[in-house]
Image 1 (cartoon, rainbow, N blue to C red):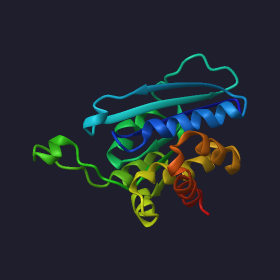
Image 2: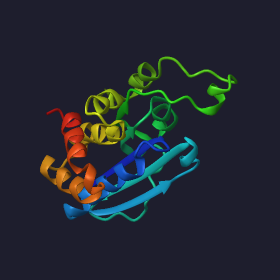
Image 3: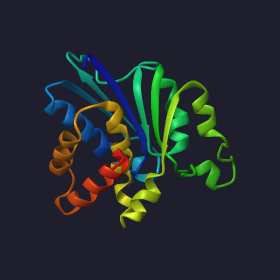
Image 4: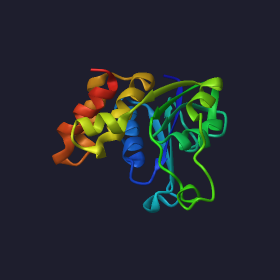
Length: 189
């Protein structure tokens, strides 16, 4: 792998930071140089959370510039729209089919946009997954990030076993098995 730029976006509490750490650790285990950068914003209040994971042979900068991301992983549709300009022309978007209304929408000053996925699909290859539904079927909505990561892992690369090993080392011990199941569901098994 020469270089891969991954951007992970979501709303506070969706597991954006944990997901980026799992991606970074998996790449490190494969012998790649990895740089991570996190922008927390108002994460604890449901605000936007953005992380960059850059991996490859020799990575100097931790931040992905606009127009250079290979993969955008989004845990919420509006966040995918908000950050799609970071993607390369041939970049892909993995998006959780979820709407979390920002404060201006909640208080009635704005409306949640329609047609986000259709709009994104005009310029990019979009892979949609209902991580919330799949995680609820497992009985734990907190593992939606592992469901979405499972789908994204197919496009990032590495063997499934390499991802599972890092999940086992990274998530809280009592959640290892459910996170592995969630990852496998997203991965397509």
